[in-house]
Length: 387
Image: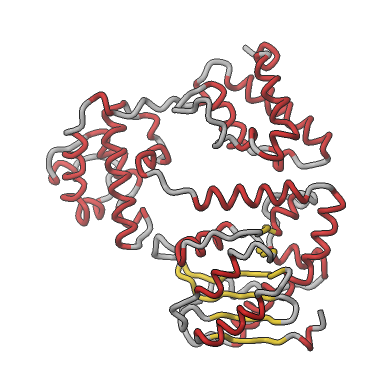
């Protein structure tokens, strides 16, 4: 790709967007990035879309264009490879802006992890690794929804897809030669599936720290409060903590006050939460109190309290470390602490984990083939009779 032959566009009307996407629809590969703002909102606010196919580099202005459907059609075109770097938040943008679930997408950060560069290699570090170019990332925290955008912002945005498109063939070749391309593709698909999985509002309470300390009645209170907070945050497009703090929900669930006045005397409660949401939370607690005891959530069992957990965790970690060495991968590629605990929760059948392996990463896709089946057989032996 000759940079002086690259056609650069700033797209700010639907007709131009349609023409651009018609040309891009014949591409084999698209390098894509997004710029967004998410400081005081639940959902990311899309500020800019960037795309490059080696012939065209376009910055698409979603502030000026209401209908971005031609671009969303590119994302769902299975004939085009879409490459993004560290795409987790980009996926949230696609989900929130258009419920657009990308097809044939691969994450270059995931690709780099299979090339021994760690699980969280930044974009600038990746570009420097391949080109020696040191990118200016000073505009990463700018307000991308404010207009007009400065030339420095535009240059920054163009660089994000220009260099990604240039280095992608090198990454792809190295990964193909290493034999890990299919695993990287599966890992990206797993990330997409998790991002687009509907939120189960009835189990949000499990995500709050210290929820394990509550008894079943208190957990029922927390279940109602956590669901209410999420629903209100969605309606008002505010971060969860702007509606009510975690500590407030935990304290209210424990004490279940009968009046707003009583709330103010409970340790751990944020005064502003009571001032702004006290009456609403009191009403939610009354709803929770009306539920029959049979409907209460089960007590949350801490995994590290399970008999023999520490010894078993160590044995599993050592087993995975050995498999990682044989595969010439970092241990973190195979399984994080969270993923090991995910497997053990399933194995011990605690906190609702049963026979379904769909939520156990170790027992899916490339991990299952590489070491998941062997790990299951290891587990069947009692992990070497771990005590």
